[in-house]
Image (cartoon, rainbow, N blue to C red; front, side, top):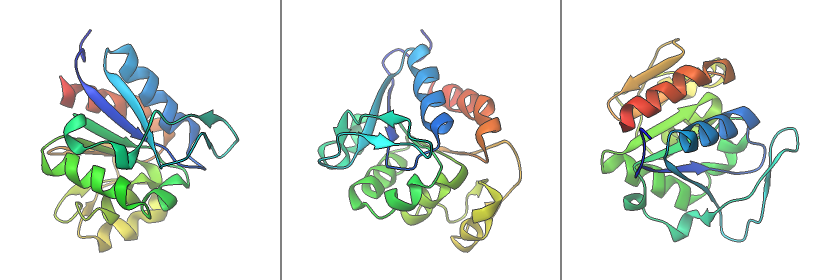
Length: 172
């Protein structure tokens, strides 16, 4: 399998966008990666925007950036809560600092923005937070997937095939 031995974290919080969490989780597992759902301490389950549950495997404060080759942040309204959790921001920042892949789709760009890693990067996101991306010092481009070094961003659920292809290619 193409990603055998690769370790990927997917962040979870309430009000996540179903496809943006489950599509990469299942696609990367299918490719052989060990995918871990990372939540906050004490959380037993998170609900998507439409009530679909996901159970975290581990809390963000119980893992380190060295535990993962990549971290994926799904969109929906979950990133607005994720960016308030210091352990999640520390994980994203740490994976970035060690050269691991940081991937964010839709509203998920809020998390790397709050982690302080967007300045000088080319990136995309859902148009509703385009100004946030620009104000963080990134150059916004309207493309289905944008890779700038170890940062991969996409706009909306229909971009998921390109988003996952880019993540897999970066991890190979």
